[in-house]
Image 1 (cartoon, rainbow, N blue to C red):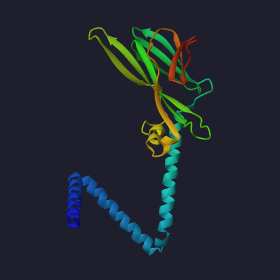
Image 2: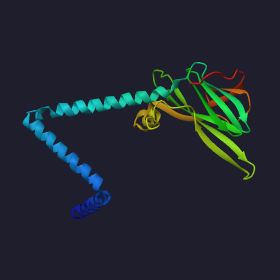
Image 3: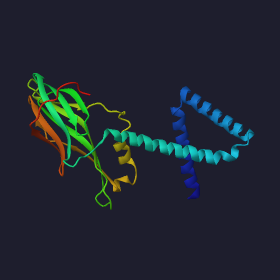
Image 4: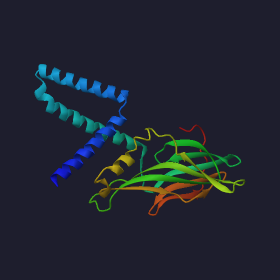
Length: 236
């Protein structure tokens, strides 16, 4: 049995080596060799200078700095999220028709930021990501939310079908890859402390000179038609 296990291990190791060699190319090989030489030269320099005994402290410092940098990056990624206010209103959306099925849409967040975009279609929805503390926690964590995308539905009379277009809500201050919501959701153990949800409004018609209030309810994201004056002047 032991010999059989060794045989299986050797076969698996051989397959892994063959796979790695098959993926190698001149660029990867050059980087591996260059990196290995730099590591060897660094160790020789440390040895000659008598700094080899400080390597554990250096590695620990680099590790802590790396972890600190990750935390800072995650914090920056949350700057695009806003605290859900007491009235639970996230944004106000203004629709102004410019041509057939084309609308100028202005979005004013409860945080004060504004954005403008153009949507073409018959109906619309908007979704949001929310981050909140679990109810089982002994303390409260302020819930956060971020409007993500408009979903525009346009009916084609010729094809007798409905086309769906996704349009981001405003510009992000940070790249999509730096989405703290996604990173925290994948982190082991945090799912027991935090709630990660994606919620979407009910489909609404696109009409000229209409104003909608986007808010959070116990059942999710809600779009309610309300009265308001369309935004004027430059939009940030």
